[in-house]
Amino acid sequence: MKKTTLAPILIFILFNSLALGVQIIDLAKANPISIPQVPAIQIGYPLTSTGGYVNSTVEFGITVNMFIESPTINSISYSLDGEAPVIIEDPKVTNSYDYGPEKIDFKTYKTNVILKDLSEGNHTLVAYAIDMSKSTTFIVNSYYHVTALSVLSPNGQIYSKTVSLTFAFTGEIEKAQYYLYKGQETVSEKPLSANTTLDNLSDGIYDLYLFVTTQYGQDSKLVHFYVIGTPTIVGATSLLAFSIAIGSLIYIKKHKQPKP
Image (cartoon, rainbow, N blue to C red; front, top):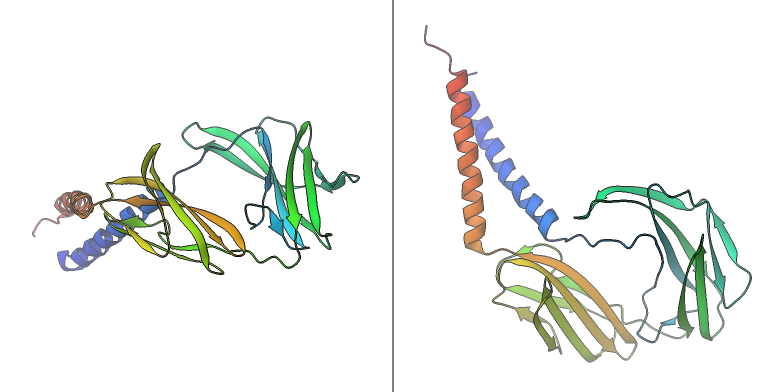
């Protein structure tokens, strides 16, 4: 292969490798892995206020985690307000191997429960799977509107020192507060009245908990993001580029055709 043809190819590989390196950092470090509880049964709560208010139709997700070697679960059941259990057969199952730092092998069974035409007032939902059970309580208010909080930034990307905290919600803020953690260390916790800026952040993985209360109730969100300073990015990029350049030179030297 001629050098004039090889050079553009090597440049293309270089830039794609740099882009891939940034994506790997983004996926591996901006989204830390949480270790699931096994065995366990959980009820995924819908978007509600702290008081548990929902409308007359609500959907819950029931999740059961079991070790890989455990017997197959053929059904999951639930009971609303002490009524006869409703059996859901053949729940969807997915397997996970070497999951997280502890390398757990487990399988997850999932099913959704849609409750319709619920009466006003208090309700209790109990989920069952083999010898495990889990319950949750909620309050039906057909005229209830949720706060519907959404975090626009940060959004799981890589940031450099300064991060904008931007969020949207339904209603008017009565109370809002965020809690920022780096590992087990509390970085800051402050009340809010609007969007703000998180600055002077050191390199590392962060967990941001945001709570907002409006006239419709309270909603909360958890966001993971990663901070890496510009000098660190430049250094890592330069090292990667240097490594690729050395590899390219070795490749050219090995494949250099002798002159006739």
